[in-house]
Amino acid sequence: MEFRYQDIVPWGRSFDEYLGMFDLSEDDLARDIVGIGDGPASFNSLMHQRGTPIVSVDPIYRYSEAELRQRIQKTYEDVIAQARQNQDKFVWTHISSVDELAEIRMQAMDAFCRDFESGKQQGRYIDASLPNLPFPDGRFDLVLSAHLLFFYSANRDLVFHLNAVRELLRIGTEVRIFPIVDVNSNPSPFLSPVVDELKKDGIICAVECVPYHFQKTGNEMLRLRAC
Ligand SMILES: C[S@@+](CC[C@H](N)C(=O)[O-])C[C@H]1O[C@@H](n2cnc3c(N)ncnc32)[C@H](O)[C@@H]1O
Image (cartoon, rainbow, N blue to C red; front, top):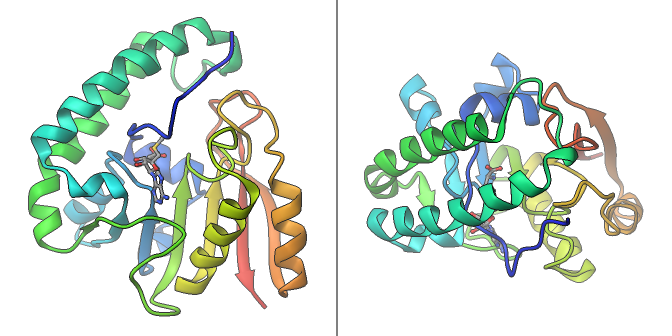
């Protein structure tokens, strides 16, 4: 069986998963952070509770909390059914079963939902889409993006990937993208062409191992910096 999605789905991970996926240190957490394609992840909500608010960007933020809860429930049925059929694609150490996966993710997405309306009023959740983000050059110190670029290689082409990554670099000093494999844990066909183009622009590109390991081949992130 293969994972197959009609389009990019709203599905969100927990604060601890974000720490592992992006190998974030306490020093990193004190930086001026934006998450692109954060969807219903709980990272923004937990950062707000810690007193170090960040900005999240996603086109689903145009909806209300009630509409988002409905979309999450619909996605839940599909993602969990596909996860049951594809258990061989994951490492079941940190998360021990599909049931535990469902519980962790739903807790994270509930935390997001409870924070969403007030966070939107405070400007922490912004409705916008790659490859055009409503921020001036260099607005952020650290730009994070998970489970969007490279992950949905079947749904977006090389031109989109290249324009999107250039936009991430435009708005921030450092960019981290996780994972660099697609939904089926296959290497993204766009990684090498994107890295080759960025190197021509003088961008420092590094593929690094991270502590988070759930997809079998998915424990690496791409770190990008202008020279
Ligand atoms: C699978 S979710 C990942 C959420 C979160 N980053 C995580 O890792 O848990 C992918 C998100 O990307 C968002 N998305 C889709 N197209 C986008 C675009 N062009 N720009 C920004 N976000 C986009 C979707 O709405 C969705 O919420």
